[in-house]
Length: 415
Image (cartoon, rainbow, N blue to C red; front, side, top):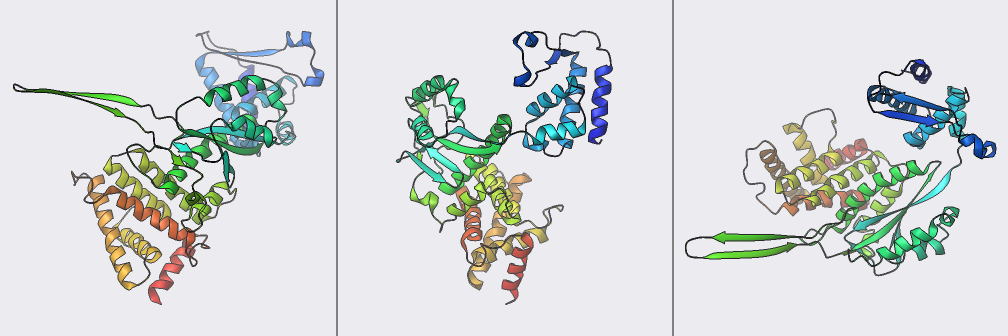
């Protein structure tokens, strides 16, 4: 359906009578521009009311469709788009031209979004990597103020927010703040972009740090320490045990390794911060996300599967095909030529990869009760090594497409 047809459907819908009242109500009122507002008029604003869950869902679905059909509307949230467009209904200007003009006239603001990432610490007050600034607990308000990032909005409710931030400094949980700015006409949209980016950022930090242990934890949500009791009884003895599970060893985000070019971390920050990623950069980030997910679990079968997904995101050429023996051969060949330096090392790595994939297939298809023969971190390390070499090797780091990578591998094979 085209946008004009959707608009016609909305007009038609609003002319239809409401069905029987089932307790569900959706309503919206006209809100004139500030310069046209009169305090008394605001009490008598025209309002449209929709009854019935089915009708409410139908109405909101039409607006969701319209939001996806209007050029430029993808830069504002559905919530904001619907409020703006609904206002035009009361002015009899609910048409494509006016909706487009309304969206295009929205001012672009730099919205500074602050989130927490748990399991990290800072020695310095702040550190910046690409588009991301990490700020020490207890230093956030000072940083925002000193760098003129509070904006005029801080004059309204700023005192309450400062008190809230100051109270967070007393929190004994290990966390740092991360500041990420988005240029957008809509704060709700800027917040959704930030939330999506934070998920990828967490996975990337896990991969960059590459530290896995019972007491390490990097996430956007806090880990809740919990106790576990064990009891055992028999005819000749009884016993008990008590254990506390905690994640309390922080990773220092301003450690020099996080800005190191030789381990690929500097390039990862650049890719994360880039608005236009090449095909290979998108593949690398997809692999980083899968590898980062493997740090969520101690289940070795899941670690195996997620490491395999990282390889496939990185090297798989036929995206519509199945993982066949010939494709596994292509993946192992790519792995060997990216990471090996000579014939002997490549033969060894080819076998290493095929052994890994054989283990992965046994786990996925239920042929193996044991999840791994080797340390599960070995498979994660294989994927991390491949990512690092693609980011840092002189003859690989400038490759921008999978076809270029495949051409490079073929050239190495036949030289």
